[in-house]
Image 1 (cartoon, rainbow, N blue to C red):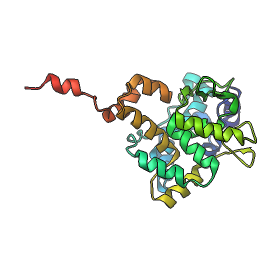
Image 2: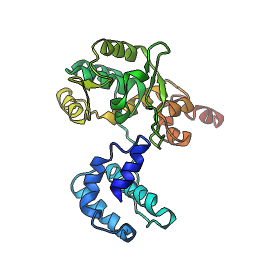
Image 3: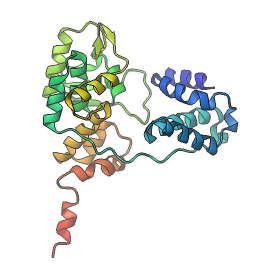
Image 4: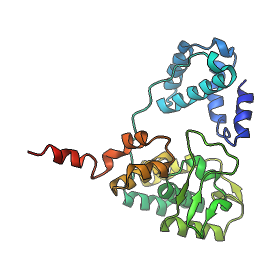
Length: 264
């Protein structure tokens, strides 16, 4: 049923990134009837993947997609799927000198542009790699990460303003564009920048990943006392509570009035 589920999701413009999860789940579940999968099966999967070095968040995403597939097929009669606990919020974020060092050290123009967009927009890697020039509005100064016809999911894609650093990088890239995609290499879309970012991280000694760029963007906004509601909308979070639970502690004014109230 998995290929049918993915095909259905792709009709809504999502599901294109499911191949990695499919390969991970395949050996453990593909020989099983959907109705026969148990919570113990999921715990066994978690143990096996952890032994191979995969993070709890990656394993949780695998099993969440398995659960979504079963619910798509069986609705309320789908078996209960066990999920490992969510990972603790990421603490790693870049200082502005570190960010500038990474951008300056990037040799490939498409990686340099990816870094700048990740830091300036807070968009997820998949959204940046999917971005096409028809959704970059230089006149109004906005970048629209939501392709036409794509259904919104929990990983929401939004329209964000184009700051000066992003505008300069986009204008330069537009002049030499060879395809419809903003992030391109040799005139073709780029499927992943993960390995390139890993190499850059080793070369500079700065721990970074595509998600660290997004996290850094949010931390910088919180440190500047941008209201949580705006940060939540900027990141495309589905709930303000989720944004506040991760980023409120970085705000200089967080709980300050509460502390004043108990002054004595």
